[in-house]
Amino acid sequence: MREAGLLLWCGNCMNESISYQIESGLSVDDFIAILKSSTLAERRPVDDPERIRQMLAGASLILTARCDGRIVGVARALTDGAYSTYLADLAVDEAWQGRGIGRELIRRTHEAAGERTTLILLAAPKARTYYPHIGMVAHDSCWFSPPKPL
Image (cartoon, rainbow, N blue to C red; front, side, top):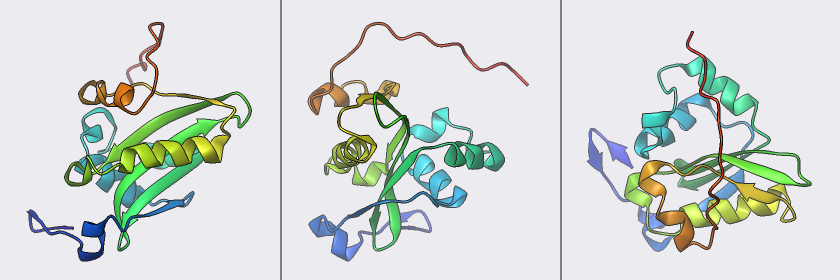
């Protein structure tokens, strides 16, 4: 847990006692907290709670990883349940990285969305080497249109 800028280990979670669940009612505050404790806040509108609320409301599937109630990881996906699943956000608290939480969130997201779907994601720059390590395959043809300025 983080309190007053200090990192305190959650006693139960030192032994990997992480609970995973589908959490469609994830709060805006919890989502912003995990985005900030990972590196994903650099590329998400964490200063715009209404936009964050819309992101959560538009998700087909939200899975969390928690230690004693504290969020340490999240996966937010959009899926049709039949053909494709887009993993829009995968965030693990930097203090909890390297323990398999991201891998487990991906596995559970794919399982919940339908394992016959293709799981698709865009890697954050700092995570590009992580995905091949867990068995994902790179694709060289990704195209996007950037958002329009307000």
